[in-house]
Structures are given as C-alpha cells and as structure tokens.
Length: 348
Ligand SMILES: N[C@@H](CCC(=O)N[C@@H](CS)C(=O)NCC(=O)O)C(=O)O
Image 1 (cartoon, rainbow, N blue to C red):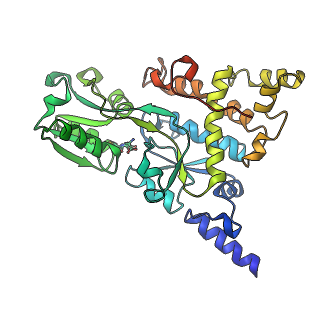
Image 2 (cartoon, rainbow, N blue to C red):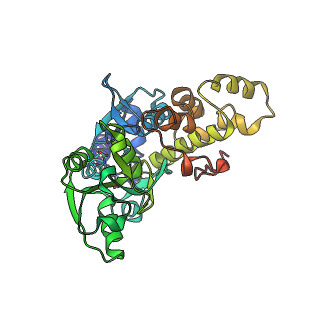
Image 3 (cartoon, rainbow, N blue to C red):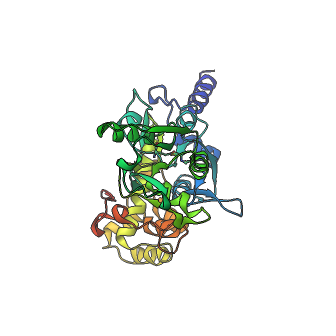
C-alpha cells in the first residue's frame, strides 16, 4: 500500500515538476529514462537555433543540445520529442511538467533562476547573445536615438521588453512598443511597416533576416542593449537532472577543447583504451573511474554524445558557421582558450 501511494505521489509530483528528495522521490531524470525519450521545449521558429526543416524535422543549435541530452540520458539522440513553445508559454510548460527541459533561446537571469521567480535551474550558457535592433536599410536610422518617438515591434514575455524600455528611459527618450506573442508576429509587424524597428536577441534578428526575400534591405544596428546569455533550463529543486544537464554541456565544450570530434571519437577511444597512462582522457571517455555514475548517467555518456552530435564547435559550425544559412561569427562563443567565454571545469 505504502509503495502504491509513493508511486502515485512520485508520478504526480514528477508531472507537475515538483521534485522533493525528502519523500524518496529521485528526479525527473528517472522519468526520462523510464519513458525512454526526452521531451524538449524549443522555439521552432528560429533558423540556426530551432526550426522545422522541409523534411519535417527540427534542426539548429538548440535542437542539437536536446539531442546531446537525449544521447546522454537515454543513449539515443533520436529519442527526443520536440515541443514548440512561445516565449510566454515556456515557463508554464516547465512548471506543469509538460516538458522535461527547455532548450529555447532563454536568457539566464536572476529572476528566472531564483526560487521566488521562475524557479529554474540553468545549465551553462550555450550561446552568448545581446539584444539588438533591426531596421530597413532605406530608413536612414543608424542608432537607438534615431528611433525616438517611433514604434518598435517586440515579443512579450521576454527580457527584450524590459531592456528596450530601460534603454529608452536611460536616455529620457519616448518610444512606442508594439507587443506580439511570438517572433513570427514580431517579424510580420515589422515587415508590414507597423513599426520602424524590431528588437530581439541579435541572433534572432540575424536568423529572421536570413528568411527575408531581400536580406540586404535590412540592417542590424551596432547598438547592443543587453547581455543575453542563452542557456538550457530545467525545473528548480531537481539536482540530479540539473547536474546531468550541466555536465552534458561541459562535455561538449571539453571535447572541442581536446580536439575530440564525431569523426575521431572511436580512434580516441582506442587510444585511451591502449594507453593506461592517459588518465584524463580515460576518465573523460568513461574507460576509467565512475564520473557518469556520479551524475546518474552511464560512464561512457561523453562517447554517446560526441558520436551523435559532435562537440560544441561542430554543432555551432553546422548551424551558425560560415557555410550555414545563418552565419554568425563565433566571437564570445569560442572556447576560452580561443578568446571566447565557453569554459568547462575539469572532469575529475
Ligand atoms: N532571450 C530572450 C528573448 C527570447 C524570445 O523568446 N524572443 C521572442 C521574440 S522577441 C520570441 O518569441 N522568439 C522566437 C521564438 O522563440 O519563438 C528571453 O529569454 O526572454
């Protein structure tokens, strides 16, 4: 009887995303493993990040991060159900347990992280972004100040709304916000001439522009209004799931740092197997030690990830590299020893 009760409690609490280890409930990670698939909340509307391609499959950097989680959690990067969510819907979806985690251009900030705010736990930042402004090249608007008294299209339920307000207030300039539910509506409003500019994360502006008929008719201004560190997130209070997510992202960075790629992972594995003195590589690939087990994953979780998605740099290049549809220079998104901000603590 007690077991049945615990079972019901466990299931309903997992469904609502409330995880409490004090009543013997482990983690949503267990539910993901039992279900044998991951439910990942994405945007679905941003080329380069998460976008439904012509074959009916989602693709992009945020999508590949979900695939890396699935490779680590259930051993198969294909076992992901993607749920497209608007900015306003995303936190409710986490709270109600409709999704296991978010990989949806979501800015890591204090209010979302805190238990009195959205009560999320953020994984490491996977894309360092900043808010920007896009205008028509013919408009002769060159900077934020030129938009005084004009209307600006902005998505609601986002950090974007507050930042644009702060930026104009700081300069004591008036402007007219025109608010929409999601990016497609923001874009439509802007293209239909309802506003002189659209504002969003600069990556989203570049992504949106890549789909315009004449991308050159639109410019992204040099003004960067904010820091927008975009990171995957899960519900607060579930340390096992958040630890696992954190180290999956760190594995992607570390593999790039070590030059371990989708193409050479098997060679690296052989190298590590044949050389007992290569301790750090052996631990990283799970040949020695129990690093995976410590975070509820198989010891070879890194091998599963890299064999499926490649390292962080490979994911970035596939979707945002110079030959991709949405080329965005890596800049801050390089690994730390290449001048960027992506840094992983040691796999010890
Ligand atoms: N990074 C910001 C903004 C992200 C965002 O969702 N932006 C709006 C547009 S301004 C949006 O709907 N983006 C497209 C989408 O994800 O569907 C945040 O976390 O609040």
